[in-house]
Length: 523
Ligand code: HEM
Image (cartoon, rainbow, N blue to C red):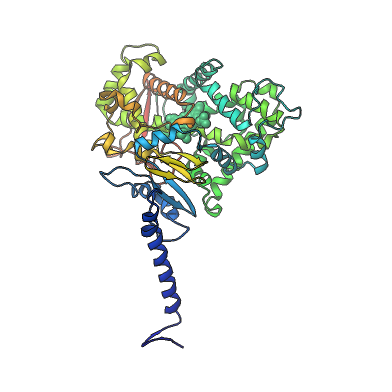
């Protein structure tokens, strides 16, 4: 049967198709042509084909290219709107706008993301509610420990505790945590520990071993971070802590972006396993866990006072376990990839370290103040390999530049797009240049350089992190001769390729299987 329209006849399939096409064309015209003209104060939408879905599918495949497609070349970088599964997110990449967003703590907030992060990491709505209450649900109305005189919510208190633990100031515990970190790095970089590790050396003799560079960095820094914050018992509770961390690190973006559960089963299982290990840790008698960091012990005290049980504490702290350990080992890995693959960079850094003549390892003061090329190399690695984004929730309508950002939506500041802005970094913005920050010292303070984020959420661990990294690189170069292993026919290994397609929370890792095999020799 055919429907007749004048002289033309449409099949039963063509008619609904025609209606759908017309509806879709009207929607497209309205959304991307008429509406932006009627409301010029709204950032323009990034075009997409499927209503509601928006750019979600492309974003999960390659978030970097999707965001890049919204940035015009050689023009002012206007904010634009990205649609991901029904949610509209403003993307800001113009340095002036970025600075304005970071300064605004009144109408732009991060709190909602902390709750979301905890929910994604397995905390229940009830736990998140307890952590958001001010004062927390203390049975007596206030804390008896004296740790929360302002009766702040546990979430706010955790932010204060991070700052006391990691930054210098009147109530600071930063020196003690730095000392613990550095002591662990020193210990785990000792020959006996590295060479005896069942998983690390691919092969070894009495004087040398071959190892994966990525695993060397991870083995030392992830164990150091875990032991610094939770003492020795957490690490010892679970023999597979390191492998679990790597799996979490690879897949955590799926958890945090709430990727469909059916495609996230493996990483969800790893998350639950780590949370269970943390819960077991908190069930151990407190007296045998006194080697934990001040932050960990204080958070536990306050959480227990507010009625959280071990499972709740574990789920709430999971994200911290990731934040502490997820970035520094990758910074060391990429920096050493460049140092070991470039003989002239290697020689210059060794000269800075005075490697030839010194008998004791370089001190932090020497590494910080007398190694400008090493520090410039690290800054450049941070520029090219951080792929995080700062997020803000808009509480009330907020003007940014000539645009009005609407309440209830989110703002994203993607670091890679700031760090690759040719207007700021020059036409070689995508090229690694170990001397870039040495030749132009002001770049480190550029509003387009944000490897540690900015504003209220600026990484509290940035100083401790840099000391960890300097100490690791200083020690490994002082203690060992390192050489990139050659193939059987004398060929050099290819420089590891970065896994830049996935949305990341911090530093990008190499594509799976990309690594450097290194010969480590006693000096
Ligand atoms: C190379 C290493 C690191 C990088 C690149 C890095 C980067 C970041 C970034 C991008 C943020 C979020 C900023 C934002 O949303 O605006 C952040 C937050 C944070 N980082 Fe780091 N981080 C590193 C190492 C560390 C370490 C070693 C620690 C702790 C020992 C740490 C503790 C934190 C904390 C506590 C926050 C939350 C800030 C707050 O809410 O006060 N980070 N970090």
